Length: 202
Image (cartoon, rainbow, N blue to C red; front, side, top):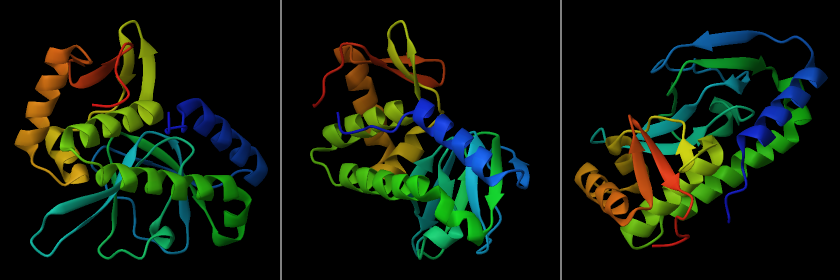
C-alpha cells in the first residue's frame, strides 16, 4: 500500500516535537475558521484536521491537501495565491517561529510526501480509481479500525471530494453508491467505512 502516513506516527512525531521545543504558543480554532495568514510561523497541528485550498478566477475551490495531528502547515510552505487553511474540525495548533523550523525536518518532509501522494491520486484514471484511492488515502491518514473495516473519522462532503478530484458532485455521489452496492464501502451516519475485504484497485 502506498499510503504510509498514520495517526499514531503523527501523534508520536507531534509529542517528540513538543518535548524538543518546550512551551510554545498554542491556539484553538473552531470548525470552518481560517488560520491567520502569517508568514512568520508554521502551525503544528496537535489535534483536529484542516485542508489547504486556493480558488480559480471563477471562484472554483481547489483543495491542495488534508492535514492532521503532527503535520506542519503554514503560509511559508506555499507560493500559491490565494491560499487558505480551513479548519474541518475544531483544531488545536502550536505556533512555531522560524528558528525552530529546522527541528521539524521530518514533519516538513512528510508535508512534501503527502502533497505528492495526493497530486498523484488526482491524476489517476478512470475516475472510479481516483475516488477509491483518495478514500484509501484518507483512511490511512484519518482512519480508525472498526468491526467492519476502516472508518474515515472525518466528514468530507461529496462536494469537497469533487473539488479535490476535479470532477462533479453528481459523479462522486454516483460512485459512492456504486461502491456501497459492491460491498466495498459502508455509510455510517456522515462517515464512510472501507470494508476489510476492500479491493486495492477498481
